[in-house]
Image (cartoon, rainbow, N blue to C red; front, side, top):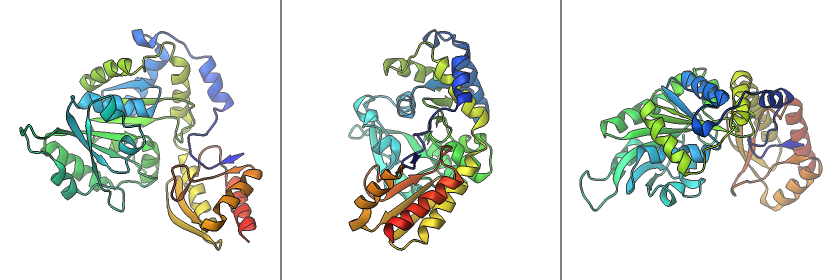
Length: 336
């Protein structure tokens, strides 16, 4: 099966499973699981932060971070299409009593500074929620957000007295694409959520990094949100394996995505809208889209518009260069 729906569909390799089976374990709620401790320290060090905290999902990691930054009735500035706003079930508002203030994205995925400035609420006026945090995302729909913009936006936020959080679900893709170390991607932010089940091949797991104080607050929220796991080292071992073996190879996913875009662009009836890092967005002739999806499924190729709109195709460690060629040939054959 060639599954292009997402980079979350990967299966653990035999070596990763062996690492999980042989991991030394403790009770992470009590703080003594050695594999979790090792993972948290390794990720924090690579990200250039003081501390890390293991979570079962990126959604929970992001939510705990927002709750660590904001009190009830506060608000955070966030992109209108950002994952923390649009695709995480409204958790900030429902569970954190935090009001999101969505901002329309620029073409490159950034949030224009003038729009951010206009959204900040007057300090001390009880009519308004208190603006407390700027939340950005990198990569965004596969796009690498320009480093100069991120520095400018976080500098602006600090000038306003705001905290800064990065949804770094695919921040390793951003680091590899930019040729810079992870710490450079994370340095401008007070907190960063880093996912290991997107692109890096782990079945479960994210790590939130930040200061000791912020991670201490997030640990309490993690417990309240149901993220306190016992022998979590079984899962953390997969993330450690991914950290040690699956980061540098992300460049191959980016190359395969470019090759897939080039191949599809040459086929009549296919419009490649964009391709960045390991993602591309395409449009097929609407009248033929359903039939094409069904025909490809019969050839064990899965691709569909996961959230509606254009079809998103994502390369990952279970998609090879040969798989890319097979997909292009199949699409060309069925659209001929």
